[in-house]
Length: 362
Image (tube, rainbow, N blue to C red):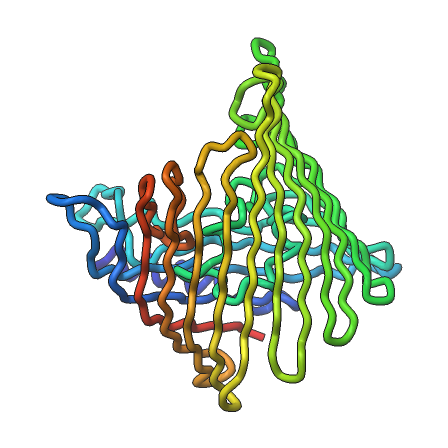
């Protein structure tokens, strides 16, 4: 009990200078769903279960410091908070047990911003991911478009050096170099594996039209020298009266020194969101992951349908059904929050209701 009182006192002391720091925003989201999740497993295994799932819930701090001459230092520190999972724990010398496993890194960086744009270093979504994120109408739910759009490329990475241009008549450019992915940031004297990435995206937004084109290349993709992964993605969005339409096309390829065959794979995704009342939207998304060009029969078909209602500007309720049906050798599944994977010629599915709550100190 005494430890808890001391901890609360320390937290209160630290909160005073933070509150006094001009421009610091404390923000977050609590995103939870309850539903029946299935992976079409064969008997005697269970093929479905009732699940409580946290979908990219988060807590963060961000702000800027004026440096003068139209220059600012910008920063963000964000962590994912898993509301439904505690897989390991640490126990102090007393009887209190504190979870240490349900906190994950999200966009966290420092940088400089001015009339030239913004330069940041740290952990961040790649430009490739940013390019089409607004077209995913079920983002961070069991209907997330990463069921078909490559989760290997549509990612957040560490060791990112990125430049974000200012808006230029509706056009913007984001470029990033990622060094030594998931490594120790030191030269590897005994290895020729680089595993770095280059990512670039151009985006245009004007009235009802949104368009983007992105490219990303990851060297030594699997940790093997000379085995690189490339991806190209086109995104289109259009607001037709009150209806939002979205389209994404993606091509991915893994290049190897041997064999000579370098199969590539295409994916397409369509989305539509339409208001049926002022605060209620119906949504539909369909997608297809084609089999690789070497005829591996590893594709699949995706569909998600749902309805969402904004109870307030910070509270949303939703219900959805989604499924990913694999081809003969497909192993794809649903994503965003421990989504179920399905085996070859199997179907992953989710029928869920959820709530998304946002908060901000500003």
